Amino acid sequence: MHKFSSVLLGLFFLAAAAIAQPVEQAVKVVVAPDHSNWLYHTGEKAKFTVMVLQNGNPVKGVKIDYETGPEKMAPVVKQTATLTNGSLVIDGGTMSTPGFLRCAVTAEVNGKTYKRIATAGYDPEKIKPTVENPADFDSFWEKGKTELSRIPLDAKMTLLPERCTEKADVYHVNLQGYGQSRLYGILCMPKKEGKYPAVLRVPGAGIRPYAGDIAKAENGVITFEIGIHGIPVNMDAGVYNSLLSGALSGYPMFNMDDKDRYYYKRVYLNCVRANDFIASLPQYDGKNLGVQGGSQGGALSLVTAALDPRVTCLAAMYPALSDVTGYLHNRAGGWPHMFYKKNEDRKDFIATAGYYDVVNFARRVKAPGRYTWGFNDETCPPTSMYASYNVITAPKELSLYLETGHWAYPDQHDEQNSWLMGKLKAK
Image (cartoon, rainbow, N blue to C red; front, side, top):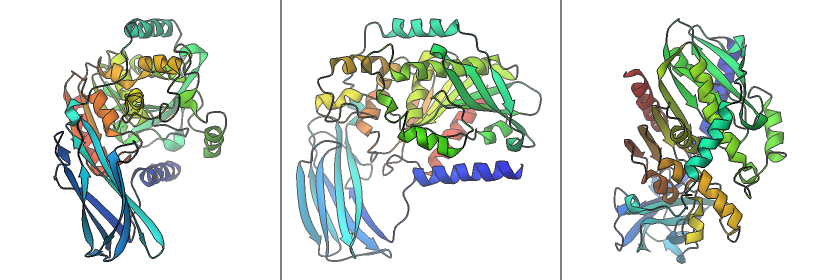
């Protein structure tokens, strides 16, 4: 591998790891429900054990503030207590309906504040969506796909020699997308002649450059990693930072008053366009196509699988944009939380949400999928994710890493990739 490519990929992976997993601290607040699987039935009381550790030992006499209540909602209980013997058992109460009960603890040690949460799940497999399922949902998206099919692909591939390896070629790709937009991404292709399965990698929220998934290409899978904002994905990082704080700040809310102009219409249809490009490659085997992503990318994985019957499997981590109307029904809703203490009276926003909420795509997924998340996710609340997961009728697997928030352990990434590669290469 060229030195430039190695350094670039290393920086990307280090940045991703820094975002994904909390940094270790000398003092640790430990909070855990009294059921080892963190699961309860409605009406059962949950208790939470709290400890503060320093150098692996309990710190006695620490004062803590704690609160308990349904996730993302106003706390039912707010108290202050002292860990006289180094630990405390908190009575967290119960829930009368399926959902998640959260305990948040804050401790101060040597003038520094530390926080930790734990979340008990109450019959999560019984959580039902709140979002409306529009009667014309299917015709709305069929019309969009028909319009997309009339637009020439106009694919332009630029080899990136500095990123190529002995086993894989890497290209910056530029396609014609929906609504006079351009779609950009990084294509990684096995060098050896042959026919290969493929994976579309869809991005989490934000604006950034992309390195592509070279590892899979070196192992015999074509990968196409896309951006969603209609800009090249190989520019200097400063360009993306400027857009994030400027022209594209708040993009998940752009034009939400009109379902035909909402920002994500182009995004969703351009995921299908990305698959059009993959299908056009002579090296693609024409049979095995996966889609993969986390957070916003988890949402786009489900959306793409629902819209495009060519998708044969999907791997989604903590999907966003799920049951966003939960807040209108006094419970947690999904990212980007457009109804969290705001927009409650915007009937136009609520109507648009039905056409874009992941719940309504999850209903229509036919491809087998593997999903993973944790109960402590404050960005994509588990209530919202279960609302989508529970309506999936296609073959599905859920791997829970209970204490994770909006991040994943390396094991989770490894499991997702292994499952996906197994599905693609099994045929």
